[in-house]
Length: 438
Image 1 (cartoon, rainbow, N blue to C red):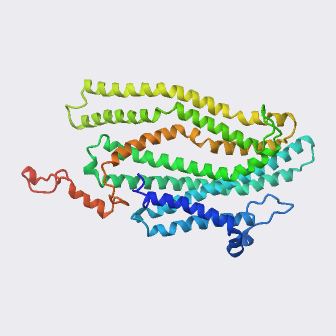
Image 2 (cartoon, rainbow, N blue to C red; image 1 turned 180 degrees about the horizontal axis):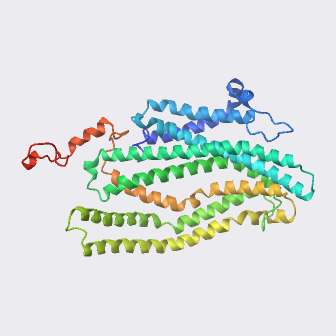
């Protein structure tokens, strides 16, 4: 699943975590000294002014972005020579770093937008309370400022979605021809055709989606946790508890932990049932495929039994999802009211302006949704575990030292054609000529 696309996956992902830790350490130790030497902030950054205090590309932010880009792509360089999977280097290594970079920049844009909303809604409140105190030009000026950030952000997200679509297809292609290079060993595995045709596509999609969400959640926490901790100083007290330092951070953490534990316990049986469901589906599909070419297969009584197996498994799955969805929707809907309950004493005391309320709510939502990554993604994780189990069973038939980086035009893949039985020819049928059917 991974070695077909990434160079030496265990080493690669371990090195990625280690390099991230090193890059963070450098940033907080000698980062200021490096900024004085190589930062582009003084060249292209914009200093905030009284007329325009909400500048997006400040010199400090330019240096942060420059450092993240440098750290990301410096990590890519050695992998061009390391490992044995150069075929997919530009997609698996450089492509993965590019996706992570875009996620980081999007989180930074979200943080800037959160601060902008706070100022904008405070201005709105002032305009409503004191008619004429805010000019129309001021409102238009604020809106034009946010458009300067939003329009490039939208364009980058659209291009990133296009890039990710191609990235996923390349990963699926890498898996497909890695497996197909071992097809003589795998053709006898139950549901082999489905696992190559369908599970490779599902695995790449699910893993990429979860990985991007996880990276986004981690980066969101790094950006919004300090902000929410600071904003929590405006919360006078929590219901039934009283004043707590960093109150909303603890509320979000406890809410997410409770939901994750709840859904994990309630849905513990679902991955096994999903795995069994795909097995009975594969058996039914296989019988129908045989019936296309062999008149004696897919007989009425046989298809009835196969379908009854599918039906029994689905009905059992529906029953288990019934109580799982009760717990899931009760938790997710209830979690929406947690910040309102937590802020109720401060709202009643008039300690929050409308803009500050919006800023705190947005920051809490960002942190809470990041903490709730597992709870929000639980059904997707169940599907991933099911696909992973099927592909792991599949890969048990492939040698650990098998070649990787295989593609449809790779000579190593083309050479496996010799392991197949020769094509029948007209000569085999007593005629001279080319292979039958050509």
